[in-house]
Amino acid sequence: MRRTKATRIYRKTKNLRVVQLLLGHPKLKSTVRYPGIEVEDALDIAEQTEI
Image (cartoon, rainbow, N blue to C red):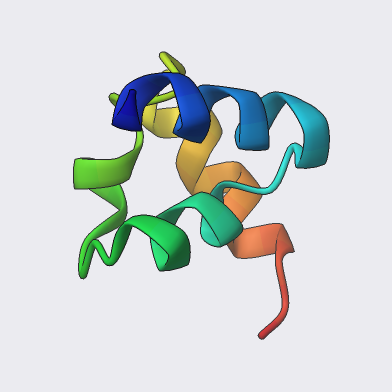
């Protein structure tokens, strides 16, 4: 269930940082496996996201 919800949130928002925060992951590399995207793509998305 955790993976499914994370994937749905990512697909809806296209915001990996949101998923990272919701899952409580300190590192982005831990989060990228949930929505099934590549690390490079995730890092690009994270760099474009302001907090």
